[in-house]
Image: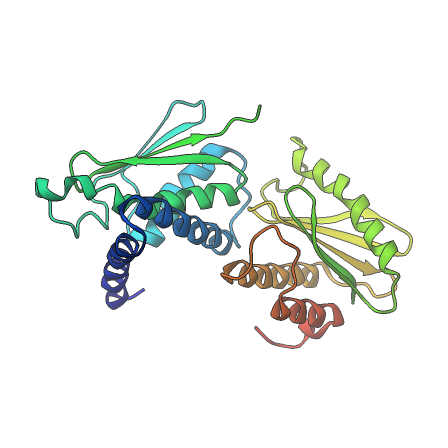
Length: 156
Length: 142
């Protein structure tokens, strides 16, 4: 993907947020972005794992997301992965692509989570396609560093 | 030449099954159904003799009329191919066949109008699979 399309997607992502705010109202933005991200993540994983060896464990799959999927989407790998070995994973990115485009001033701090919603959906869609139903939430304290929390739904 | 190609989800729901016109569809359904057990066994076995990371499962079990091959993607979608014993296909060609089926399935999933998990009715997909069934994959092509 050349540099021309990189900027294009950043603008497009931002405009999606603006569009949902104008069309459906501020409370609908997050769920809509997440839903779109879900379908994108689902398809992306299908395409990307075509020639990969079979994954045996959940940890391997989450590592794959942090490395290969992050590389595809953000041209870099995720910076940190923590797990409690019980179905919860934390992915940290110190220079999150969409947040680097947003001004760091306090004025826009509350809107930071909107820029993570799409990526939460992508992670959730990817995990679902691997057969791991999970909830993905995000938090941003100091932009452009952000954290994604994956909670794998345990079967009852 | 393959006589039957089937696509199953991770919960073993049939998404798609097509067979050669000369074959009995019911019998093909039955054989694919019986192969599910073998696939599950292969996937869950911890003492795999072959490369346990291979997505291609190889021949699943012998039958007097057909040979049955399995392939499970990383996204737990299963492909089953039945091949008539009278027309043996080389291992490399079977792998190539599965690779093309996988490619067709990926194109299907990337289609935003397809909801994953629903039975497949997409025309390009059925066209590709039907042409693979007839053996046109043997000619050079994408």
